[in-house]
Length: 163
Image 1 (tube, rainbow, N blue to C red):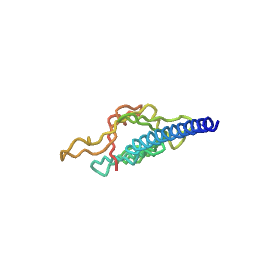
Image 2 (cartoon, one colour):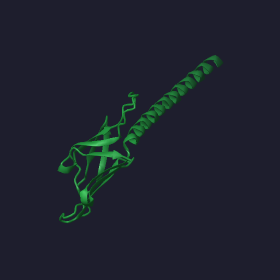
Image 3 (cartoon, rainbow, N blue to C red):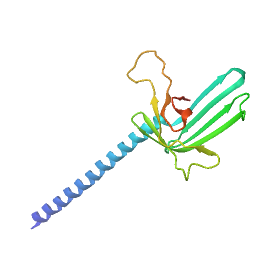
Image 4 (cartoon, helix red, strand yellow):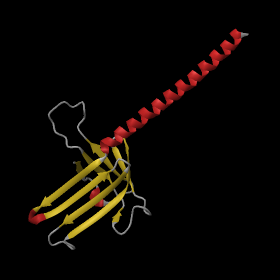
């Protein structure tokens, strides 16, 4: 009788151990998966800027900030002598997501557009360009976003560099 009780107790302990071990394995898997996602978005997040200057103090400047939480802010400033008006500020905001090396931007018309934020980045796509880690040459490749698609006509084919 004592032997049967010990056998049942041992079986229950083994089942409990298996359950705890499975929970630990699943938790570890999810932790590693989330850290990988965080590390990948961390690679893209940050400040990007592009300044174009010409004669007579004409300036066009683009600033883009990709936040870790998947949101972005964009500011375009232009100062053109003889322009109407001479200085123009345009703003945009919304959400971004990354898949491989492509960043897709989206703007919620109800939440992200208002009197200040007028640029609609919906379906805009930029390619993240950086030096390949396997490239051991001295070639310098500035980390940048190269816009390949946008409803904002002047954003197409624009490169903005990570600061």
